[in-house]
Image 1 (cartoon, rainbow, N blue to C red):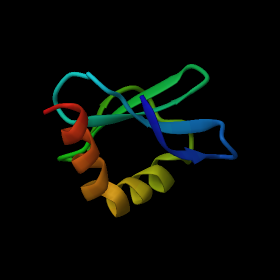
Image 2 (cartoon, helix red, strand yellow; image 1 turned 180 degrees about the horizontal axis):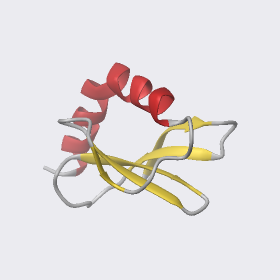
Image 3 (cartoon, rainbow, N blue to C red; image 1 turned 45 degrees about the vertical axis):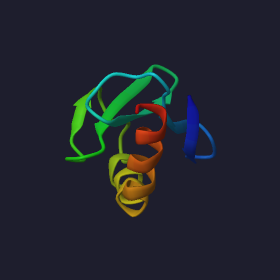
Image 4 (cartoon, helix red, strand yellow; image 1 turned 90 degrees about the horizontal axis):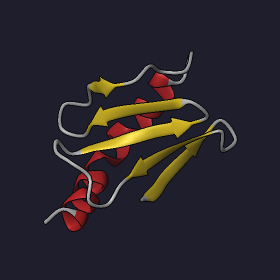
Length: 77
């Protein structure tokens, strides 16, 4: 697992996990939160977003989407 970015002073982190399952995705985790976001469609696959965090996280993912997909492909040949 690699932490890609932290949000809200480190309370939440965006993770890309090695040896994970398809589709290509990342996880936003923190406390009891585990939101799974598809890297192709940018849709929420599982989980519930913390109030007010979705826009911030999705903006970051959109900006870094190509790099996240490239790293996913490194871990999942």
